[in-house]
Length: 273
Image (tube, rainbow, N blue to C red; front, side):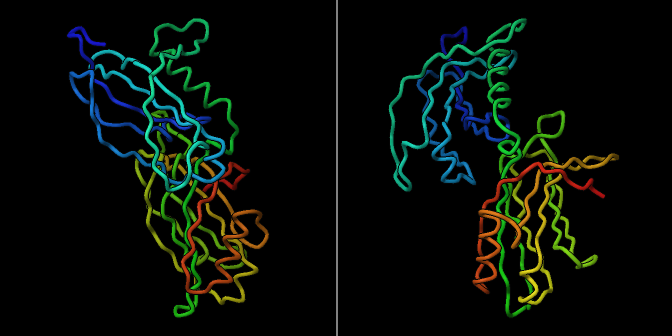
């Protein structure tokens, strides 16, 4: 791709549908080579069985250009359902030069590529692009209360103009718990895949937990104006599916830490205070 007859290649990955900054992984760039050897391992956290059935991995190879736009060399796509769990598979695949879809009035392959990725985002529903959160629950008989762990979020929706967010998480055990019911996590700057690793303790009888629900919401911090709501989920007896199952397993298995991924949803939410 370069005038010296070489390239400065790197590889980037996206999961489709839903290509966006939040689910892009990339390797480092290797300089002046047409036969790069990376030996890098890239990891997607929070991949569910449903994702494995539905999603396709797009692997693009690009040439990094310090002064202009990075140039697209070629890509290949791979359906995740072809993989078996815990089995490594090796592939030897030719890259294809896919022609990006362009809208009228745009020029250049870099712009076309950007639009192509945007269109992938637009096709998917609201739920998809809000992100996921990894939560741990444990009722401690020794401490006489519920320990909630917020471990990390992945693929959060970008709320800021720079294409990122400054996320933090709020917890609210309701109803009727007063001030002690609310906890707030530290803000993580400019990231769509924050690691929180924070735990919070609620002093509550085991028998009272069945009547409670835990409201988990993820926010984007904005200086001087109200914070943007990214998404949330509610765990409890009145919840459904995985959210109900997680709460039920916590009630049933005292002193066991139970971790689950939950999809964030953009339901109507009370403005942040």
